[in-house]
Length: 400
Image (cartoon, rainbow, N blue to C red; front, side, top):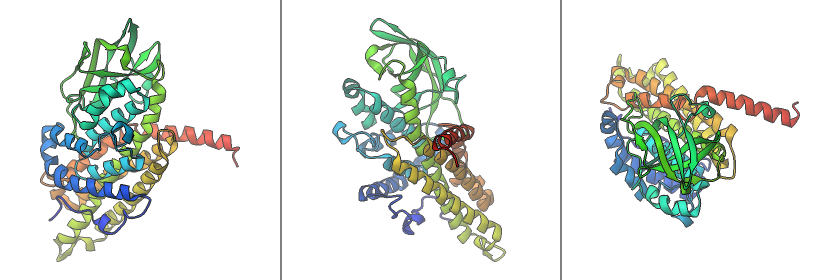
């Protein structure tokens, strides 16, 4: 059964030739490059680093060589100068073969680089940008705390100005790239107002915990960020004091979009695996794909995957640093996140005992997919946000 590394059958069906998925030739070439890189270099190492529970840093730095770690950074500042559609493409294609590795990419390129670039000044970019875009420095973002997840305003990490420094105290948890990371974009309360800072390994009083073990997304690692009278220079303040909430909310949109794209990637791979396995595996002297229940899994999985993909890419077209898309990004992640998990579950069911074994990638994709219903905003948070925002829009329109 050829359920290992496969060429994307949906590309062969020209589903990616539509301008929704590849609006320009540049996007099409990007997809081809990433898809080939993922099949050739990401897929072969996925099971090994899932078992180790750590990031393949050497492979991660190859993303820097491809210019992907600064994909949304202006060409004038050394980046790729591309848009949210390009970011969606990269997460979609990488996640098909190793969602855990892709999550490390998201934490670095979206949660740190994209956010940092949009709220930093020239001097800060001079100090950090080149090294994070090359992959020499792995980066991440610190928002979640032991007592504050979705309720970000409940965070307890504090910052106090002390001469030419800020002093941070508190703990961040579940931080992707924590163990390998050199620098982090960290949110803290300064006079009870959220404020953003860059904290790096050179800052006295900053440390990270041991790896936090997790069920899935094990191709990336996770730890706590610990600040014990951590002193950072005042020049590491991002934007203005009290301006952190604006940065956070703006960046959450592209985070949620790219998490949705990851689920699309998982779903697409699982549908491919189902089709391939059901065509080759025989039972009762016929292929599995002749049985109605198997047909339901394949047909429904394909339809759900395509719907999630269309919604995600449609939102990506309109999202940018100056174009907010809170409703769209919430909707895309709300709809797409369960699709990856469901398609992985159906693929495991189609494969039976084989799907449950680590010899094949389905069980790993199944474990990985669950995070997408939690990280970057829970399903329940998206439902709350959408209800609030849609009600506001409805009232502003005057109703019926």
